[in-house]
Length: 74
Image (cartoon, rainbow, N blue to C red; front, side, top):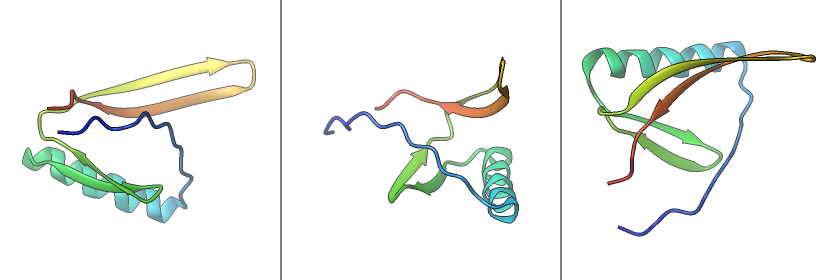
């Protein structure tokens, strides 16, 4: 398999778009299935074996919560 180039993108969604994506993701996780999402024109496949974590960051300007899925390329 060809090695993918590094990438770091962040998209902003409306509340309704975010809820739709989050609900679709939660349903996939609950069923133990892989999840596919398109971000900045690229389809990203999150395997069922992914590890999930929630990260909280705080600095002088504000706070951030990130829902993360991590996996190693095969």
